[in-house]
Amino acid sequence: MALIDTNYSLPFNVIRCSHIEYAVKDLKATKKFYVDIMGFIVSEETEKSLYLRGVEEQNHHCLVFHETGKSEVYTLGFKVAFDKDLDMMERHFKGLGLYAEFVDKHAEERTLAVKTPIGLPVEFHAHQTKVPTMMRDYAKHKGLTPLRFDHINCFTPDCQSTYEFFVGQLGFKLTEYTLTQKGDMWAAWTHRKGNVHDMALTNGKGPRLHHAGIWTASVNHIIHLLDVMAAEGFVENIERGPGRHGISNAFFLYVLDPDGHRIEPFTSDYLTVDPDWEPLGWDLRDTRRQTLWGAPAPKSWFEHGSVFRGVDPVESKIESKPIMANYEDLQ
Ligand SMILES: [Fe+2]
Figure 1 (spheres, rainbow, N blue to C red):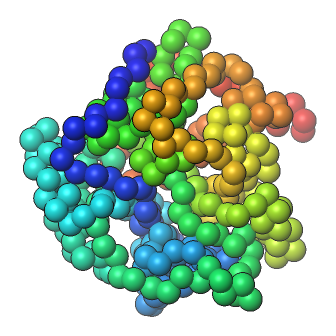
Figure 2 (spheres, protein in one colour):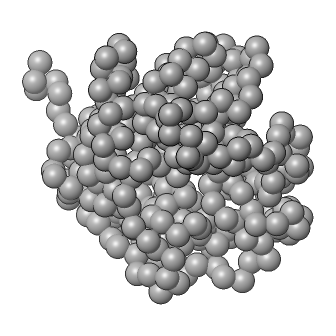
């Protein structure tokens, strides 16, 4: 394992992660879960597509769902600072011998679709259609009161090289990382916007999406979501938590939507804007890393993920044994 320096000389500026585009089996069930239970705002909907945003967001969408009869992920979205960044990025990706093409996407001015070396389908845009922020429309807040899209976490079969690509070729900054006892990079948290992460990487069969992180204002909003889920018949969708992560120091919950796509309501991590921020390293066998209070995550959390359309995931070669809750012993 080696840590590398962030590349500050790139000719483009990625601002933050912005959205995920999913395929789902039943759009009505998706809308019930994300809008009625979690409290996302509908920006636009058609018979087969649903565009949602968090209550403070003024961009058209942070979650997009298309009813196709399949549960999968189309693309991971990121925002760049200016339109010209997209042209510089196209040149950069093609110079690396990687796929990069402009595509038409609803409610985005120009969209550059690329593929990373491990096959992650990623899109960059500078401008989405503007919509009103609902930040101060408190009477319309419900469920989690999801304020904004916070981060993406993906399984990768090669965490070291994927981390090096995001830091060395896209200018992301490492905040925390986990090593196996042999010293292999097992997980990495990297950011552009100044909190703990925009893009996190977890060792495992991949590439696959692990989860989307959604920011809310307080721990109480996460507790309230749990009460709403319990009252409305969604107990089985609660996978892990609530709790506090050691990594990121954030308060978390993991829930699964009707298609099994994982969402993490998330709050209260920390500021990372200093260029001389020193990354924090963790040992994979330290249970405080996953939950500061020591409770291990369930097996499903290490194994279940959403596949990307047309991308065959491959097994990781890293031997690793994260500590898991052994629910079989309890039965
Ligand atoms: Fe997360």
